[in-house]
Amino acid sequence: MNATNTPTVALATAMARALELATKGPMTGGNPRVGCVLLDSTGAICAEGWHEGSGTPHAEVMAMANARAAGISTQGLTAVVTLEPCAHTGKTGPCAEALVEAGIARVVFSVDDPGVDSSGGAQVLAGAGIEVVRGVMNQEGVALIERWHHSVSSGRPWVTLKWAMSWDGRAAAADGTSQWITGPATREKVHQDRSEHGAIVVGTNTVLVDDPSLTARTSSGDLHDHQPLAVVAGNTEVPQGAKIRSHPGGFRHVPGHDPHAVLAQLLSEGIRSVYVEGGPTLASAFITAGVVDEFHITVGPMLIGGPMMAVRDLGVSTMSEVIGLDIRDITRLGDDVVVTARPRSGK
Image 1 (tube, one colour):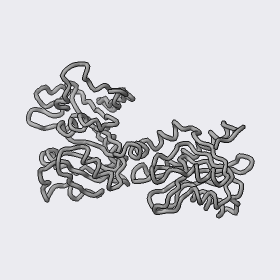
Image 2 (spheres, helix red, strand yellow):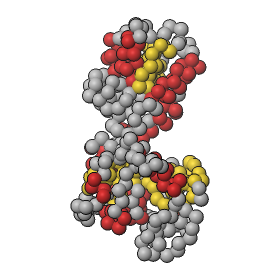
Image 3 (cartoon, helix red, strand yellow):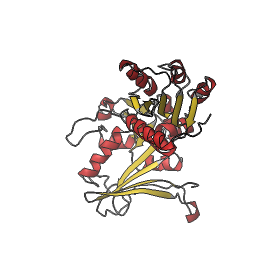
Image 4 (cartoon, helix red, strand yellow):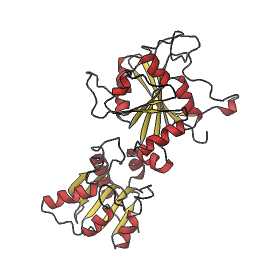
């Protein structure tokens, strides 16, 4: 059901505030970031809420609780929420039914819920006689929860693939050493990126050669509040004394070299986004499997030469088979260049 004569500008202003509130929630975890504002009959915001993470009240419920705590009746209010209210019972009850019971008169949301189990809230609301307006600031709403939305829609976690290389495309010198191709500012960005994903994946060779801790640290050396699950993919046993085994975000060893199997296991554990930071073999495997959603390619100001290419054979034998990329951003960090790219549509 769509509203008629809806003041679109006012709703967009309210939705912009709901999107801002949603950013207070965690980027990682099994649930999306969601924000909600409640409007009175004049269109003024009278209460706000956001989802603080798995097991906590959803944004709509938090906003209604805040309204009641302030002595405001929810009867006849408009709820502006960034994601279609859920219609299922998980760790909390269905938000659509909570809105109906609260006497909300109109619900405005940005993004349809793609979940098989959680979608259908709009139908529940409309069936109860509540006016439903969907798609307000839809592009911005999808961007906010892009990784979560992708994982639910595609059935696998979002994958960010990162590698560092010299200007001539080498990931290491001939003896295998690679510290450091890029500078401190770029490495700080990598730690921030780690903290914004549910898991970090490397291959067994990286663990055996470098024995990395793979924690996400701030510029002062402290741990970020969120630490990704540390995952090692490959058949070689991870040494008992390896630093990664004591990772504060947890440790998993997934046998085999199939990216699809790795992602399937991680999705089953509630991981919605993965940061792949392995060497050339692992990077090439994820590329050829067609499961990379975004590339973070960092280039250090040096020439190395030799055989240690950043990416191995991708099965491209002629230019008609190349894997096209859309460049989304080019940033200079110190003397380094950081390129953000995504697979080109249709390639």
